[in-house]
Image (spheres, chains in turn yellow, red):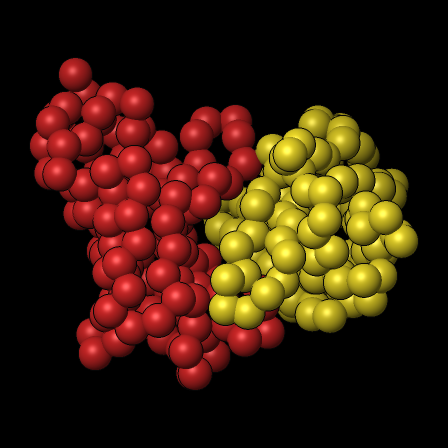
Length: 114
Length: 111
């Protein structure tokens, strides 16, 4: 099976702009989670979508949003970008069967905000 | 709340040395535990997992045992190689399904 794919891999934006990142999960996986990775804060959970519904949300401001489509592909959107949003954004997919909730990660999208 | 604490890095070892990376956790309930590895410029790869107390996860010569009594999940490898140089993350998955990560431990193996 193909792995998790994320597009684009690199992105440069300026403050105040908005950005949309895309994630295609492993075929058959209905759960998609998003994480932000920064040198200062490490890996932090943003949100999870399962069957087009947000199931879980981390402690991020409302500028961070997401959605999932009927084919399980997911997008996340960040509006009014700030310098501190510069990070590696990782998407992970899983079959979400407890307790074997293995999450498989994509290569990430490196976002730089200038 | 749930949390994971890993030993500070970076850790520098010579090839064929023994590796231990300590990981302890705080959690309510019975989380699943994972070790992920991240190579430069890449995403995270699942290295091994354990879902209940006394389970031992193993893969590619790495091992970790789920110790509920000490709330630990230490990563070990008997003989490291240069190709093992990477950042290692310990994580738990609570019943809500999200992963909570430790801060990561950078491992550098010298020939």
